[in-house]
Image (cartoon, rainbow, N blue to C red; front, top):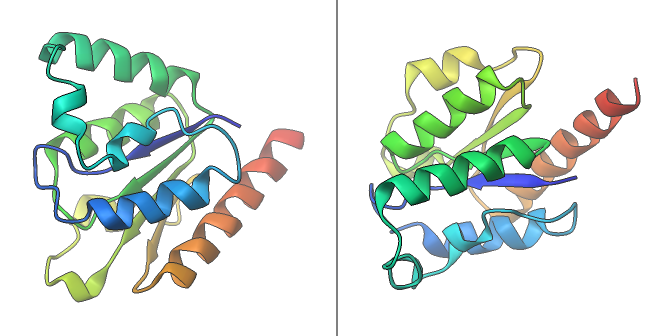
Length: 146
C-alpha cells in the first residue's frame, strides 16, 4: 500500500523529529512516497526544484498513493492543500494532532473527522500515534477487500 505522508515544510519544521518517528512507523505498512518530508535537510535536497516542479511531483505521488497520513499540529497551507486534494481523489485520510502543542486544530479538519474515510487522532506520545496508524491501516486494508 503506497502511503503519502504530509507534514509542515515551509510553515515550520519544529516537528521534524516527530515526522521521522511517524514515517518510521508508516514504513512498516508500505512504501512512504514522501518520506523526504521527515528529512531535516529537506530544503537542501529540494534546492534544485522550483515550486511548480515540487507541485507536479507531489501530486503524482498523491495520485499513486492509496492512503494519506498528515501530521497537522503545525499549521501549514501546503498540508491543507494536500488533504483537500486527497479528499477529491477519494483517498482515506488520517490526520494526527498533538493537543499539548498549544496550537488549535482547524475546525475544518476536526469537523471532517468521522466521515467514512477521514479520521483525526489526538496523540501525545509515539504509542498513541502508532495505535491510530495501526487502526487506520487496518480499516483501509479491510475497505480494499470489500
